[in-house]
Image 1 (tube, rainbow, N blue to C red):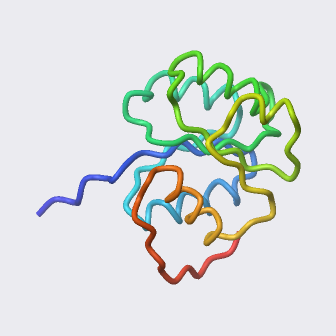
Image 2 (image 1 turned 90 degrees about the vertical axis):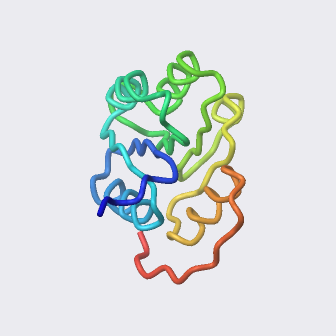
Length: 134
């Protein structure tokens, strides 16, 4: 009859289309709705529109135009309680000062990302077979 309601909505902000699509596909398979942004400015604009329904924001720190750290500051300005997961090849003190819920170091695989998101959102951990690695 109808499709199941999503278990949450994730905003994925990454300028690499393959990475963004891989992350989106992973979470869609687990029942999340996903909103994609290819830049920091787009992420802030989409968060501003949809913030009431966004469960988690996954941010690549090195985004074009408005960087991931600035985008995070703006997102937290809209909703200070927003949950943020940084995806980056290197983490620095400035990023840690923004107090993300977690960060995942690139390159990573779907298992690491899924386990981290389950921990952030307080889900009972589900061990499932993950095929794609991105």
